[in-house]
Length: 294
Image: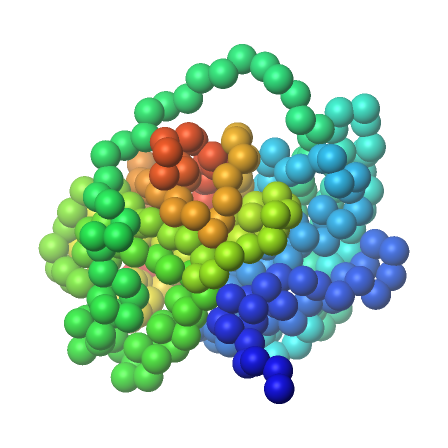
């Protein structure tokens, strides 16, 4: 008798788009918390598609992407990969995600063979021990009375089942109306071990990187976000730089801040550190952040 799939198994299936032609892939979507495809999922699927057209000894060192239209979670997403360049050290790919005959997402990614070079990094900021922090199952029910939708608690718990994500401080929806410093920290790791495939770990981090990055924006204004209905938001673009090896099934600290918000948009940036203090990833995103009228 086959054992049922774990939430992590289900997520890994979604992040494994089917190859239907040489440079064409097709992906499905997980149930979404909002009526559109989760941006981190599209970015991760696109990076997987790009990575499968690249020699195995080359890994992503950067990606730059734009979210063009809301994705339909009920319809497969087709990813077409354009082989821009194959150099001696670097490989460049462009990926377009299409639904209903129109592009919904665009990604450019660069891959590099491993090289030795100069080394320095910012120090890891202070953060509490991840095991001292409440899990989603312990934290979210305490704030369910604030959610705009009574069914949101179950959907949030389902969305967080594959990834153990723990807030270092209270999330934005915990203290609505109380502006705080525009900084946020979360620890995360997958709820289960992953295969020893570096591209898989990079794609898992890409998936998680879009979950909480705009929290720092909300904190600065005492807003609870879409969960409580006092802000309408969406990712506009997303960029990542992968500096050092890491495992997504081991604790990673996601340190996030927002330097600016204006014109209905907000900028957020993040740094992902390994538990040992290595700076593994840098992230920058601009998001749409609107206050509902009326």
